[in-house]
Amino acid sequence: MTQGLAISGLCKSFGGLQVARDVTVTLPPGSRTALIGPNGAGKTTFANLITGVLQPSSGSILLDGHDIAGMSEAARVRAGIAKTFQITNLFKDLTVRENLRLPMLERERLTSRIFCSADRRQEIEAEICELLIDFRLTPLADRQVRSLAYGQQRLVELALTLALKPKILILDEPAAGVPSTESHLIVEAIKRLPPDLSVLIIEHDMQLVFEVANRIIVLVNGAVLMEGRPEEVTADRRVQELYLGGAHA
Picture 1 (spheres, rainbow, N blue to C red):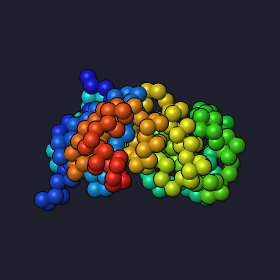
Picture 2 (tube, rainbow, N blue to C red):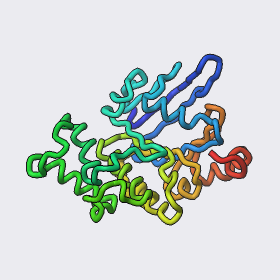
Picture 3 (cartoon, rainbow, N blue to C red):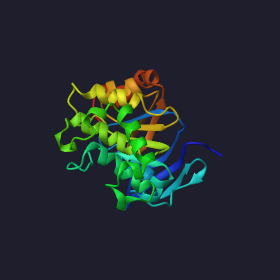
């Protein structure tokens, strides 16, 4: 049985427009993979095919050896695929602690008890405390999310996504909108992610990519141009012309 995510021959067309062309990649457990490419390369489409927002025209998507290509978006989340977004998707009037409690209660089918007392769900409250510590959010636990700096909100979103206990985590431009003075918070948080978690980072901030990724996939016109270690990708003339030295993702 293949462990992690294995994508083979993935294609997607809208009428005569082919936006994913025979994409074959693997995301083994513990991998830190960056997906880069110029505008219109198909990065968002690729992520949407993995998460179930879009259904492929052909090809297979295997998670731990099981074909999930026909699953709904919600079913894929339950199977272990989670994604953050370019814009934070948080409940701004709730506290950090309350935001983290939501996915845990959903995961345990207890969403009707969002404000239940800690002594009634001690295991959930302990898990919240652990995430607060892991993401350096403990001093902010009982503050409304809207009062936090944007970089801190991104950390809350990342912690919230981890609360789903995913096997595959897709980070869609995790540093988007984060001031340069706070971007180190995102880098440090990614470096502290569980070592067995497979992480796919869609990002155009190449400094961030080089700091956290051990493998890079270059996507152009819906197809994989190349993949390899960061030093291999940066040395490739095609990548330099199409991306690193020219257009931005």
